[in-house]
Length: 157
Image (cartoon, rainbow, N blue to C red; front, side, top):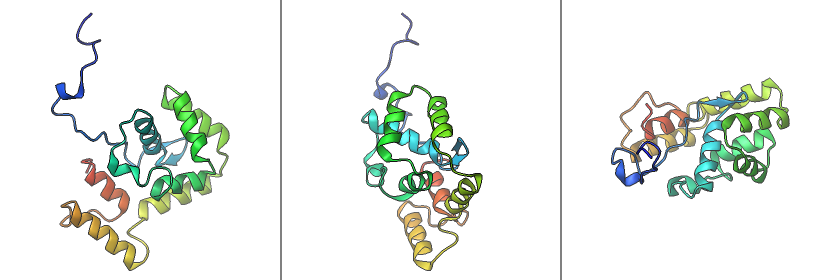
């Protein structure tokens, strides 16, 4: 069998990060931004590879909880759908069949997510600035929202 088919340990690829980053919160599935990232986090969790930095917010806080609340999906249901699926297409089909929110709700979710940190109280803006400083990104004026911050912190922008 060729080495192409032989799984290699991660250590064999020193350029691969120890942290496996989930997709950008800007990506969408079934019309929902953030959902692909949440699916990635669930897959990483099920594989025992979700980095500790993501554990505190996993399914019960932050943007994870926001998507679950807005969609009306119970965390355990989404985890089971991801566990039973092989592809994102299967997850997308399940969401399209079971999450029957109007486009206006999806648009409101997108608007909130893409402006979180830019629009709102001074405490939220200060928290975003603190996160930027902690990550060595305090000089980046182009990071205006938490979604921008996530992408920059995960080396996407």
